[in-house]
Length: 126
Image 1 (tube, rainbow, N blue to C red):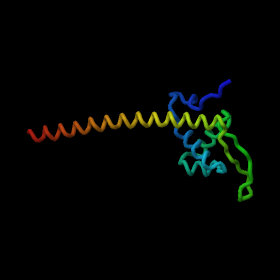
Image 2: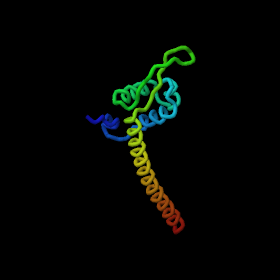
Image 3: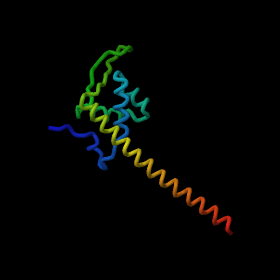
Image 4: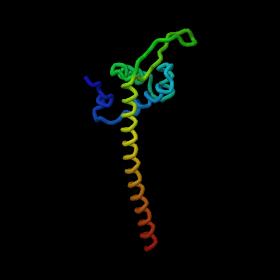
């Protein structure tokens, strides 16, 4: 059975950039507390916990206990093979969405620029 894409949880099927940001962070730093992850990414601790649990449930990441330097139990989060593939898919979808937004913004700016030029000409003719 194929694992569910983490995007399937979103009602509008749009990329959740928080999911991608968590995966990016965990790819570069595995031994991190959820609180540190929350602070680094600027998202709530509750949301980080929700994302981490969902990623673990879907087999995207694995969590492993370890003792940190404060003698407390902590977790190291590792991307699984499926997690690496999912991160790649998310990255591509994120890039496509941002390129579309960029293209739309360029068109809007060009239209605004034309409108400003028209207004300048109309003002000069009066």
